[in-house]
Amino acid sequence: MKKLLLIVILIFAVMLTACGPKDTPVPTVDEPAPVEEPVVEEPATAVPEPTEATMVEEPEPMEEVEIRFSYYADGNEADVMQGLVDKFMEANPNISVVLDVVPYQTIDEQLPIQVETGEGPDLARITNFGAFKGKLLDVRPYLEDPDYFENNFPAPVLAAMRADGDTSALSGFPDALTITGPYVNKTLFDQAGIEIPGEGTTWQEWTDITKQVAEATGVQYAISVDRTGHRFAGPAMSMGATLIDENGDFTVDTPGFRAYAELINSWHVDGVTPTEVWLVGDSLNSCIDFFKSGDLVMCMSGSWQVNGLVKDVGDAFDWVVVPNPTGDGGSTGVAGGSAVVAFADSEHPEAVAKLMEFLIQPENFSEFSAQTLSLPAQEEVASMGVDFNTDQKAVLDALKAFTNEVPKLQDQAVALNVHPYAFAYYRNSANRIAQYLTGELTLDETMQRLQQDIDDAIAEANQ
Image (cartoon, rainbow, N blue to C red):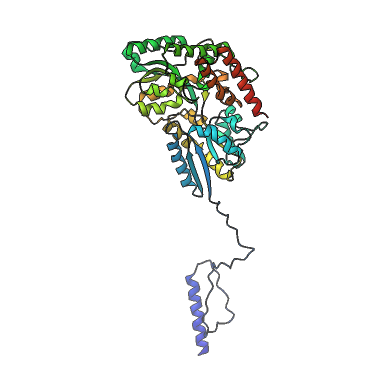
């Protein structure tokens, strides 16, 4: 009986082997397994218990952080930026970005103090680069592609955000390019039956023509310019002023500077310009509101106003951007714009760099330019062209007109806004010129005191 049982077991083993893979060798059986104990085979792919030596350490997820982004806006920039920030946070759920929208005055006056005392945000949108000298974060070590960052923005702008002697730091990027230039109410010209003059028209000729249009249409004001040293600079340079000499120093007492101050004074004497712009208030007053209401024929402002005009004027009247008036210095506006910068006190430099690198990617930068109707400062985006989010011919024509001003810019018109001591000129020029316009100072006194103001501010900054 035992012999028969052995034969049956052997036959069964052979049958099982025949049903397996053809190339699997048949095991040799030295002696039969005990029938009393069923054999339980271990799975061929059994995984041994992990030990300390074999365990692979999982990378720790990035710590959840919050970064704060102080932001000012002239138009809809904050809304557009919030959309991009939301997209960033969706792709990076461990990083929370708080967009603090504040008035420009807060950026200009309070932010430098906050940063100086270590109470500033992680990032901010600024225009006064000199105010944060030595306070910016070098994000280069945290960027995935620092070469792309560096190669897509104007070198002078990037350099303006570096500490002295540092030739490689990347601390921010210009988010929009601006050009100063004049807006003209085309409807009023049409009603007056006067043709809008083009390239080569002087400031005096524009003054005479806009006065004719105002008289013919019965509007209150003919011509004005924003009450800032920035907007004053372009016309002054066009009339021959040298604001930045060959050594890079500020010098205001030049014939062109005097000539434009005298021209603005004549506007006030003749009553063809709104006194509220220069003679009342502070240095942030603008002529654009008088233009939007239809009470002003020509307003010297800049490209950042396009979006606001679209929103506030609508189809109330037609407006156009005209070439900057010409003079002994040619025809030039002033290049400028805002920049997004990171601050050295940030506790989360990796997250800050990640956000900045996200914002400069062509699809995101292009979206910002298209939605805000701003001239792109990013080279790849500019070369590709921006499909501006508007079907209004006036807007597209305006953006084209401002783009045409770029090749005409004087070197000093490009250098002015990123000059390390631009603040010394900006903060003092409008107030001193206003003192001349009100009769508080003579023009000679204005030039002397303005130059001293600038020299003193630079000396104080270097203490």
